[in-house]
Length: 160
Image 1 (tube, rainbow, N blue to C red):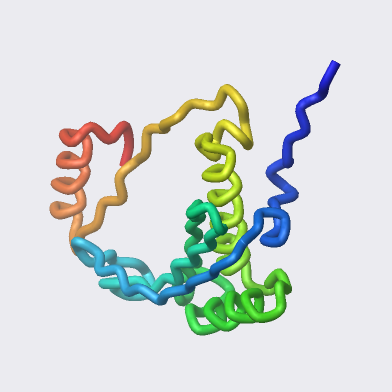
Image 2 (image 1 turned 90 degrees about the vertical axis):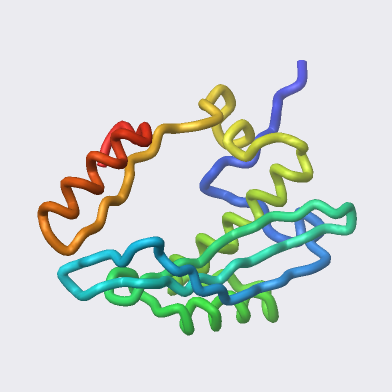
């Protein structure tokens, strides 16, 4: 009798375990289709760090650090420094949750690519391959919000 050994979700594989041979990080600015109005101001774009880890066989894993000023405990600059520290010293950034998410996401996606299976199947066998998502609606007044909500429902979103 053989037992399947799985890597639990709370212990992601480390880069040495996966044969990581190349690491790239890129800062990207994403522009929202429409501005997002919040109690803290208007958001028109968001800076993110995209982390790509690769092995010698051509498998890649992607992760993203997406701190949001005023909403997350660190800035994009702090996230970039934490990721660079991990690249240089293989030291997990415990004080930067979005950087840790980028690293974990990239390593987990590389693990799945090497296994030739979707990540959700490795982490939770039998889990669905897709999930319904709600829509983020934005507007500067109640009429715009109501119209955006109607449009989201028309487009098939189960909730807003």
